[in-house]
Image (cartoon, chains in turn yellow, brown):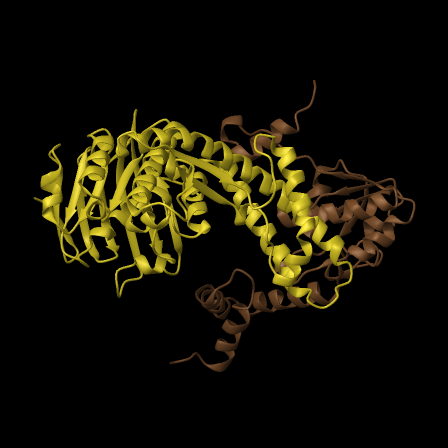
Length: 371
Length: 198
């Protein structure tokens, strides 16, 4: 799939802009704070109805205005689709595909799927477990409805359980039976989440090992593993995982009570990353970490491609300057005019360094034009 | 800030306290009333007062009623050994519309939701437990199929189990008359799980 054309009205620092894109590599060149990332962001909003960096839709509206609109034309394998997203501070958000209102952001992802790679991703390997969970969650939520459902229900059940834990510092009548019913909800949705994450990690593991080898020249081996926050045997099935989580919740009840929050479950799990058996989360050079995340992102791209049976669009936000020659070359070889890619950069040299003659746009103060 | 004269601004303020009504809608409703014939507005006001003062909760099932006990609870034609547990009075209406159900009801007036500070004592659960101790053969739990509804169902099932009352849960599945391809994935997989032999 690729984005043919986009139109922005009162979006971020764009008053009224219309651009058409090449199905290959598109480079946005300009100084800082001119609106390069805002263009990438608008593509992300078209794909998910949400920004990847703003907390509230309000922040996306041009200063002094009350509403923004984004319209895009997307070409998928077989047909062309029109996406239109409108947001009004009072009336809220309105999403249309081919003139028909849609209510689930997954419907958008069916038409336009994106993978974002930004400098923050470089922290994923060494950062908090939460960042690694997000690496999995953000894509799975978009492409897998069962995952999205389990994620939402699990999060709600967790909030309810934590409310009981917080409220019961004093002796609470019937506390055990109150917690037990929420444990049950947590365990059944949690087990589903864990099983789906494990399936995804299993595939990502194979894909990213292959890609890590390609970047590093084949000397070292990358391995991913899903690490539960409680004892739980892999590949024993959803029912067994549910039992394991139930018993872990019961065992940690006292600790959870004193902390006022649930200490085990998929919201505390991690994605373990090893190179040659060494844990990259705590050891490993910066080079290894960068190669790992690059391999993981490219693996995710292929994983998403398999799930939606089409090529997602790649958004590279200021990440080229963070990668050295070798890794940049690898990234471009994966893209190789097969995947529509949007790149932001402050340095025009990056555009020149791409051999596949990218389409270059100059971005200046809320205006963009093709060079 | 310029304000409307007191009676109008008071009306707008009261209307905007209603659920789902923001300040703009409240303003529109208020001006609609100002431009309506006087007796129409009086009828609306009377209807609101009547609905509020002439109804109460049934002392048995907690459904909204004029007479206590309510029509369903006092009917001789209903099966008194079956209780259908629902969240709100509107759910009673929904099930009554089927014309299939001949038992009694129990309206919880909410579901367990610790996040919002709602525990077992804040909804009509104790009253339900008391009713389950009378001769009851089946309790049908018809709370919504979300986390709160499921947790509430589980709570009821656990208690029912200790006093040997059979509990059942409404099935999850496909809407009748709908197209399979338009069903969302989660509903469809639930329907698969709950498939029946034919």
